[in-house]
Image (cartoon, rainbow, N blue to C red):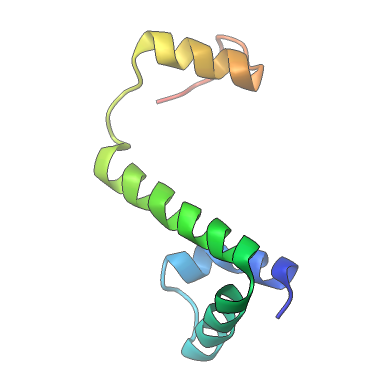
Length: 79
């Protein structure tokens, strides 16, 4: 499996929505590819953080810094 193929299925893999055979291919690739291992680990941590803390509104100062960093105007809807 190539990195590009793995990345195309990553969300479904993290969410447990892929068949066992494809999961095994991804796990084999991730075990051998340190870059993809980092990507999978980071995404898992991000999903966990969101599930644990993502439902709280951003403080206004943080929201404004994020909008500035993303170069989005005040009309952007960040919840």
